[in-house]
Length: 144
Image (cartoon, rainbow, N blue to C red; front, side, top):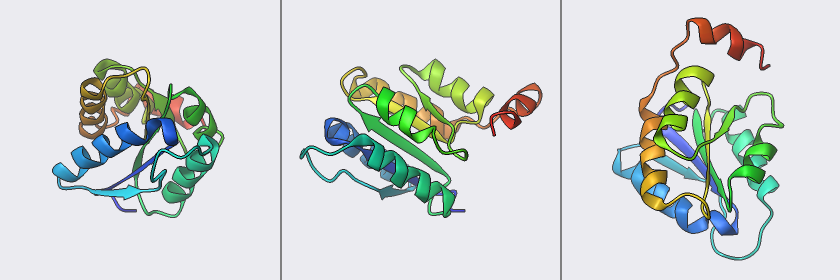
């Protein structure tokens, strides 16, 4: 698995935020695996959630970030895959706890509900926070 690679995917509504997140990931010295969308043309978010799930399953990335208008649809679609633990986050606290307590491997954000600055802060918390394990490990095991 490629620990230094973070996969990114969005629908058309999340494209601009995805691009800002990609730049931030690369500025950290990590590789950004861009799974699309590659523009503002209308696309369907479930297709990009599947692309993320595939990238995690085949080891092209260890973590991922998904973006759609609200983050809700793309997170629901991603969580249909047993190996994906996607957490829709709206602030640094939820991003930190998603990693620390839930071992989330995918951060989901809403481009229409979360400002760029907050989204970048969420990304930092997501990438910097390790899974706490301990009492949380047994709970995460029950997820699948």
